[in-house]
Image (cartoon, rainbow, N blue to C red; front, side, top):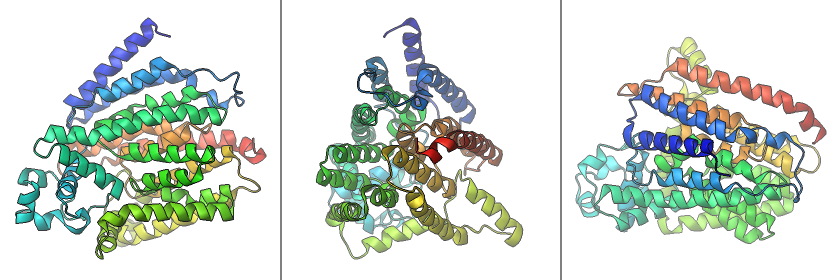
Length: 454
């Protein structure tokens, strides 16, 4: 239904996304907070009837409403409005362009440090310029982006090798297509789980998902689409195609590997192990075009640096770090990072075996949400776009704290008011203080339902 309020909200939101995407630089934190706050306020207003709809009894096929086409089209329009944005809030896309130029010219991106090849004949051959190099945020790291990403990076560079905007648009188009696919899949999956298909708008209209995935070019969007596609095919009893779709998800971002213990628990040991093994087999095949004796060493060297050196917008780790400073007078990330990784692995397995008896779809969605929440709460680095995976999973549960987090995560940009960046710890405290408080409130509210299996 089109009403004056909806038209006003649409025009206001479109204006806000355009202003943020095309006009706000990362150091302009105060302006960003105002514009993002207004967009999030509009998002809450338009989606307010959906925030608690999943707490109602499951819907039957007769009572399920039709998807609201106005909201779906608005979600697509907001994303299309950002098509020609050169990201101002993130510089990750520069590494995508760098890797893409290597791939498009037949070079293996996993084998070269940017700092080693700049000013070499190779760099000249593939079009890696000084301006591109000095815009990189990780010139001394080997690339960690999996093969599906690399193919998409290479395709964008191949289609537009000499124009920055053309390359950026080429990088963004797969994300736009993935988001449209997600908006198509979510209502179908929600119907299958006897939930209101309009809950998809909580993801589709979410400002963080719109700005960070489409606007700032982050491939969590592609990962989410392929993961949902894998779930859809599995529910259609096409498990072989499902394993390939999940492999494509892992081949975009490694995060879905976390779900393997839950999949095995949900499917049963025999079927679950076969499903996981076939998925890993397909994932391995995706790496074949890039296979090299140094690939694993280089990727793992960068991943180890990620867990033992990088820290941003963390929660539990920052408490551990503060204790470490008191006890040792230095950062203990090198020691804490590996232990936190082990704790994540143990916690993921514990969550998988936590529920007694057969795991229902309802319990599975909650366990998936809990697994992702554990991962990001124990991580040493939590960029805002990381938590978009929580938004997609959260739709299938009665919990709304991921959406609260999506409103609070923008506070992490307070770190970029200075160069080099310097985190504003009080803002981090506010972010996680509100998040944890609301999360505890929700978990307590649902405790009885979880214990009775409702």
